[in-house]
Amino acid sequence: LAKTTQPISMDSYEGQEVNITCSHNNIATNDYITWYQQFPSQGPRFIIQGYKTKVTNEVASLFIPADRKSSTLSLPRVSLSDTAVYYCLVGPDTGRRALTFGSGTRLQVQP
Amino acid sequence: NAGVMQNPRHLVRRRGQEARLRCSPMKGHSHVYWYRQLPEEGLKFMVYLQKENIIDESGMPKERFSAEFPKEGPSILRIQQVVRGDSAAYFCASSRLAESSYEQYFGPGTRLTVT
Image (cartoon, helix red, strand yellow):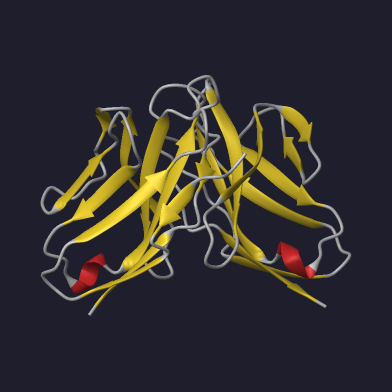
């Protein structure tokens, strides 16, 4: 599985756009990029998944450059309720189903 | 459609006792996964089961831990002779066969405290 690197923590204010970048230099051809969100005392929640270019859903956007060695999760206009830990996962879409979570990025949104 | 259910939500056990954690997957989901999260750490995969089969237990400690997913009823994670180091949050997740292996639905977790 590709190793991922993301910032340990980020701070933001309500209403701002937050971009969290994940580095995955040794991503394989059949690897997808997936982001999860975890609130305190809760299980992780799937946010978004992508392979290349841009993916957008009602929660976030995921930007993946052509070389796929990094990806950026973009949260538009964050609110206090977006305070959570965000995990970047990289791996094949099929096959071994064990998710490998790193330390994640702890996002703190201030009023 | 109810989400993944886990019970109990909190469990306190004395050293040496047994802990049984239960997980009911989402309706229609036949794949169950157990993860453990130690305080201030990320989640670590433990085991992946389908009905009546253990598919991948590469993350399970070799001793005292076992898991099952019977034909009927919830999946059970069993920890025998608990020690203080077993204190953690244990999360169960489920998925359908046809979905991406990276899209799993997590339960609220069981917080085990060993005194």
